Length: 244
Image 1 (cartoon, helix red, strand yellow):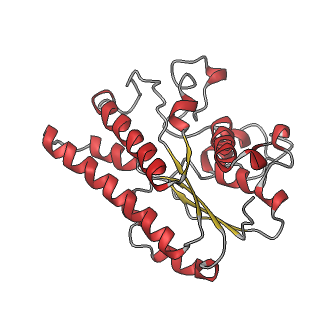
Image 2: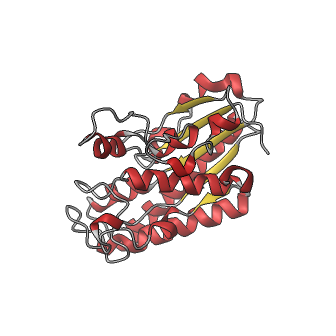
């Protein structure tokens, strides 16, 4: 078992607390704010998720340092410089866990531009190149890091029909190719993989409302259950000693 000294969550809103908190606090003013995927991986909230009591990083490593630097709307551009890593160089020779949720917003922004098929292919490849650069910077800073890469979910369950995103259908292939890129990159680099895309299929807009894992006001975001399921996959990606 890895003896982690720090956990760093990097990426976009798949990792953050905001949308799960909005959902849970709607009818419960006492709900804690730290209910996003990264926060739950660090420290479970047993009154909400009793199944995971004792199955979190803080239970295994009581002195673990945790920082979520993921941001709402973040793209690969936001992490490509690596400047945000300078604050954590104290851990450069330590065993650090890093979870990454990134590139979904790059693809969403691409939808808003008029591009030829060739231009789209070029931009997708540029997204992949930046993704690799982000990972390379993290590994260069933390040579002993354990990386968990995360695929991008599809709230349409393959239909491409998503309110507020009229071009989602024609870009489904871009999401599929990018998920394949993340899977292949994880395999060739021997990083752990959390295949959120596969796990979430059937829990998007094709499902009954009580079976959806997305935030209802904007289903591009994870719900409270969605955040917990991302956390579940991260635990499983880390191995049996963490998942059970």
